[in-house]
Length: 373
Image (cartoon, rainbow, N blue to C red; front, side, top):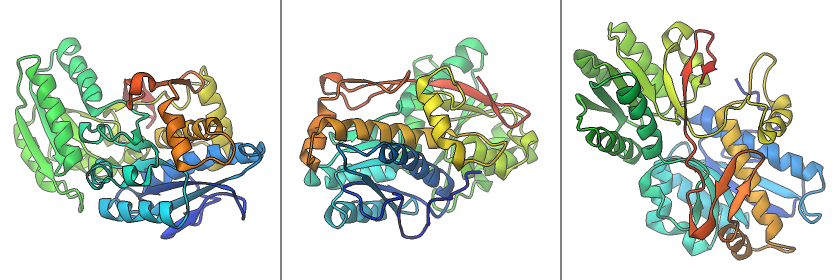
């Protein structure tokens, strides 16, 4: 797993190696609780790129100060953190937040619009979050992930009996809606739909209920830890369904939580390039910057890459904002960014778009614990 060598995790943590930095970029992610591993990875991924920029002299001679606050996967706490980052830390931009609940709360409270600040990247593909004019998305939507997965199951594998397991919140509902729409497009219906509690991550009853149906395939709308628990408990109940999940499931966390034998065969849709595909300049630079952040024999992760990509895009916007940038000038810079090639991975915000990517790739956990594509 990721070794945090430069971070001191607490309620608030500063990630810049410099004591006095000039340009503050803020981030609110869970560094404690059920989603902590992914939240930490997003923060470290962003920190890696900011460290690269600072080592090269910063932006117009000014250094980046990256301030991360723990929201423990609590949307209201994320709002409070955002206000702290804006009002006390004087953040010029925000990067790589976590979760549909947080995105929805930001939209409903107009926190970003009121501060005139850009959020570059959020760990959510929900439609409910995509109407916010201040959020610039770096990942494809859940609807796009679901469509590709359902297309594989129905068109290529001939599967028609599909069940849905989802957490009981906005993220879960968005995923369920996307699955039902993709099935309806093919004149199919889900054979069953079960929910589990987001806060506890207790999936025991969901596993039992779905095991009774034992469909050909189950699509999980879950984050990593509940997904791992479901997979383990479902298999222990003797159910034989093929399991697929959306991109919020990090396969490294699943591999760590349960045996590789149980994780083997889990299908996961991905919304970023494979972190070991060194054909892309983006990935080569990412691998070089992440070398000191992972243990020997382990590899950079999708969550690290997601944070890294958001940071890279934010830095592009800061550079374009000129000397003495403000929140307003950074926001305008993002609005006029257009097509951004980050080294083989392209994000397109032209014509007022906020959804920069539609990239989706299907992967499967191999017997070794790695991924096949």
